[in-house]
Structure formats: C-alpha cells, structure tokens
Length: 450
Image 1 (cartoon, rainbow, N blue to C red):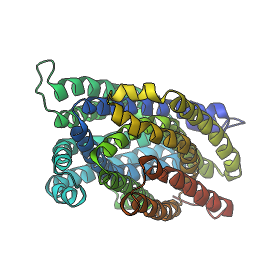
Image 2 (spheres, one colour):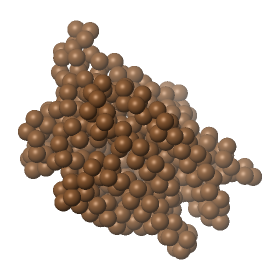
Image 3 (cartoon, rainbow, N blue to C red):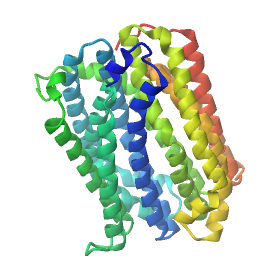
C-alpha cells in the first residue's frame, strides 16, 4: 500500500517506487498485447483494413482521453487525501467520479454516433480507408462508457497505491479481446466474419469484462468499507466541481495530445496507403517500447501528490531522480531490442517485403526517440501531480504547436521520408521534458491545494 510505503524511513526508495509501478506496467503490457494482436490480425486483411483500423481507433482514443483526463484529476485528489490521512473521504470522491464518468461516456456515445462521420470525411483522403475507419468506429464507440468505468476504478487503485488488481483485470480484458478478435475478424468458431468491425466489437466485449471485473473485485474481495466506498451519500455539486477543477486541464491536455497524434496519422495518410500501414505497425511496436513509461508516470503522479499531502515536498528531487533512473533503464533495454531485432519483429506483422522496407528505418528512429519520451512524460506527470494541471496543460500545448508545425512541414510541404517525418517524436519528448523541468525548478508548485 502506497501510504504505508511512504511512511517508512526511505519512503521513496527504488523498491517502493517499483512496488507500485510494476503492476501498472504489467497491465500496460497486456493492453499492448491487445494492440499488437489487433494490428497483426488487421494486417492480414490488407493495407485498407489496417489503415481504417488505425484511423477509427485513433479517433476513438481521442474521446477516451476526455475520460482519462478527468480520472487522473480524481486520482490526484485521491492520492492527496491518502497523504493527508483522510482516507474515509475517498469513497464519496470515487462515487462522484464514477457518476460523472458514466454520464460523460453516455453523452459522447450518443453525440459521436451522429457526428463522427462528417468529421472523418473532412480529414481522410482515401475513400476506402474512410469507409473502413467509419465501420470500425461505429462499433467501437459503444464501449466508451464501459472504458470510463474502468478508468474510475483505476484512478482509485492507483491513488491508494494498490495496483495489482489493475494487472489482473487487464489480463482478463486482453484474453477476451484476443479470443474474440480471432473469432469475429475471420469468422472462426461459428462467429460471423466481421472484418474490421470484428476487431471493434471484440474490444467492446473486452471492456465490458474489464468493467465487470473491477466492480466485482471491489465489492467482493476488497475492504471497501475502509474508504467508505459504495455508501452513495447525497450528491455534492462542490465535489464534482473540485474534480473538474483539477481534471479539466488534463482532459483538454490529453484529448488535444491524442487528437494531434490522430492528425499526424491523417497527414501520413496523404503520403500513401503503404506509408500509413507502415506507420501503424511502427505505432504498435513503439507502444511496446514505451510500456515502462505508463507505470512510472502514474506512480510519479500519485507519489508527488501524496508527498505534498504529507508536507514532504523537499523529497521531490530525490523521487524524480529515482523514477527517471528506473524508467530510462527499462525503456533503454526495449529500445536496444528494437534496434537489434527489428526484422524479426516486423515478421510478426507482415511478410510484405515492401512494407518491411518502409517500416524498419522508422522503427530505429522511434526506438531512439523513446528515451526523450520517458523523460518528458515523467517530468510532466510530476507537474500535474503537484495539482498545477493548468501548467502541465500549457507545457503540452506549446510543445504540440511545434510538433504540428514540423509534422505538417515534413509531410505536406516537403514530403520527406517516413523516418524523417517520425523525428517529430524527438521534438515532442525533448520539449516536454524541458518545459516541465524548468517549471519544477521555480518551486511555484509548493503548497498547492486540491
């Protein structure tokens, strides 16, 4: 438990950091197995299916970030209350967060089923890719409220530092998705052959399994009375406003960040369908290289908020050095594997020689860029963990302006090679790290209340 861990003499030891981070990393491993599986299956259907899957999937991910940002805002407040020793107030906070997330998910489901098609038509050039992307998205969006329920429980468990359940639940989600991918994409086991839509439908069922697993575990196997959880006391508008006050900058930050990532792939699509397919494979492998980052950034966020709640702000520098050392070591190992085993990794996805030739040089670029991403994300999450989420939003927005400028110039204006286009990742990680580090050095975050 995180609170017990940080009450020890060396409460921010590498061991305690790892204890909280590794279940989240394992959960991320499982999630990325899901992405690799989806990509590998869709690649067998051809470049159009693969391109449609990435366009529809990224558009869905933009909407996911609306809920993710609010859930991280809730996580920051939960962690602060734990640091302050006010764990009995956490249950009411989680209940309000859950209600807010479900309402938001249902609203987005209804509006996006009606409004997504016109947006996609304005951005995607290939009619075939557009049709596949719309087909994927129309099925995938059904799972949004379920994903938001999962985010709420994840925010609770990361905030209190009990993260092992996240790994267990994620493994259940992934196994469900892989089995249904195989059945619904290709029509095995008596299931209909749905193609691209089958991958989306499989993910929706998997998200249902995840939401149900979190709920049942919390009700039946977790001492929820310790936090006054599931009491469902009267509605408190001020508590919703408190969550939104911390969470809306993160919601906007994450949504814009992923939307820019979506636009990045839209720009690559204008270079050609093969380049888009190659970039989707790179994205899948890149996500694996970045796996350790998600565990360490969530841990950083929670530890920083608890440190401030305990009045231990002077230990922030020590915490960040230890997190960065661990994170860079793990990301570096994965990057080296990509540099040395690139051709073997590509064989998992495709046997198309032309596609592999497009992909390998780009894979080498992102493997090296992953180190800058590790520094950028850890430091930026330290800023948001202080409660200064508007500052982290400002750092992200300034970085994305430069990022998009280079992406547009390299694809539309200059039509550079795919590896040159993907150098955007160096720019993004480096500027995030620099902006967050400069702010943390000012000390203006000290004593921030949430």
